[in-house]
Image 1 (cartoon, each protein chain N blue to C red):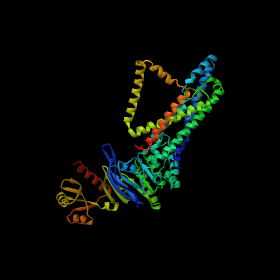
Image 2: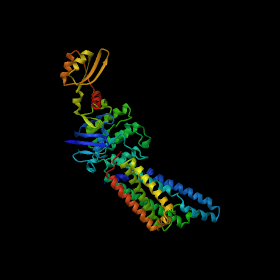
Image 3: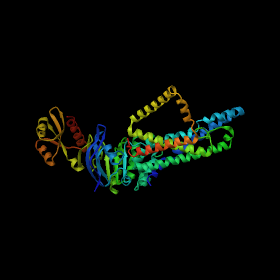
Image 4: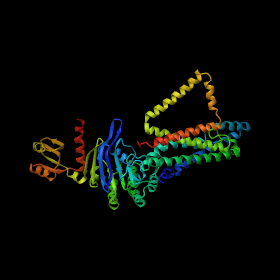
Length: 238
Length: 293
């Protein structure tokens, strides 16, 4: 099955693809642990404040960051090489989709295990938060798994879809996309300022329950995957 | 049997015709030269034939089938392109490992020999390689893949003369042992002229020449002598190029077999053969003013 070659393209240099991101994560975790140890010397109140504040810590992006990049890189760097090596677009799409899903599963599992350990040990005995943060979900472990999996999958497919659209439509896509986002932003500000009750309704939207948010992320992921699969069939190598 | 055929194949980018109504047939198990100036459409044609880009109109058959999204055809095709980009952190070793798994006839022993011959640092990141070393990566994959249809697009940019010689020697030796179809695009025409069996010359996206290499070797001659005598002799000839120095002149003319050379000698002119490279240069430069008109 030649689609497997797409997976091999990523695994052929495992240190580059997976070793370094995990090493960087371990380094970031080490720094957070050191911060926890230092703050811990300042007493219980400081520790509690740190524990609360670290709910918003972005240190986990040391691991999630490369994941965000993978979506873009898949089309920007791996797609031209895959076609250059004689793979078809269909083979690339199948292999890349399997890789996206496998990556999301593996990293979601890693983060969930980390979070479970972190919660069970009271922030590794130092009351720190690294895995148990807002972005990965502060609820039950299974919720962290679902949330992280959906977030990673949606991000990967979104990145691939954006790069495919750029390859297909070129610079006009960037200008059009940027303009639409700008118009949306201005419309929202105008609505808040000029329309009574718009701001409250918007706030209500942003305070949806966990399940609804997961639905939103899943829809974004599905739309991105659909758009990418549609575009990649006609994407040409520049 | 033909390894590839195109019929009225065109590729347009907005108002630019990169490939314009190209109809060619390349026989299998031969070495074909795809020649032309920069921007003539050589890379575009090879990208079309390997399904990396889509044709605007026309048809093509590669190994008897349409190559677009055809795994059966593409698995027997190897396209070594000068502009191939590799992911960050990729090493030659990684590309060879991937290629080994992709090409059914991959020869690992040959690959190892070529790595040694080209002195390629296979564990160094590709983005840190010199232009010549990057070309060596492509050459090694192109030769070791032993694909039934191999495209080399400017395969030796940046290679020194020794490495270029090495490429020709290894290509010829391997081709003799394992005949296959090779399409070679290059600017170093004289260096490959003995290797080519058939030549397609592209100019501004169109086929200008589609001939056997042997026929092209004697397609033109260079006559030189007194300006008046050269002018008189070339009045009825198809002149590709003329150079005048004082009362002397040299003209490159299309030859009609040995008769033209004999007639020139009879007219008191010196006759010299024209290399394939000079012939191509004169043909394309002679066409440029005509096209401008």
